Length: 108
Image (cartoon, rainbow, N blue to C red; front, side):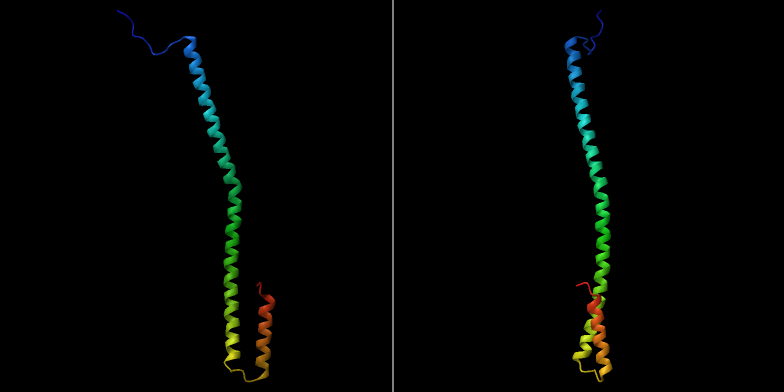
């Protein structure tokens, strides 16, 4: 009876082939790890920028709401002037003062 043959071949050729395959595997592992590091770096540099963008959007939305309120106030004043409901000079002065304040504080 003969002993069963192993798949392992201890010859030098087989060792060299296994060494080359191991080297290729190591190189692929290094390349994958490098890509993971690149992705992590991208995320770490991008995240603060996204936070700033989100903050700026929030600020712009608040400013937009403020400008809409000022626009509504200005439209109300204009409607008062054009409707002829102004009966005395102090009212006109008040309206002009309000218009001046709106224009002075407006960021447009």
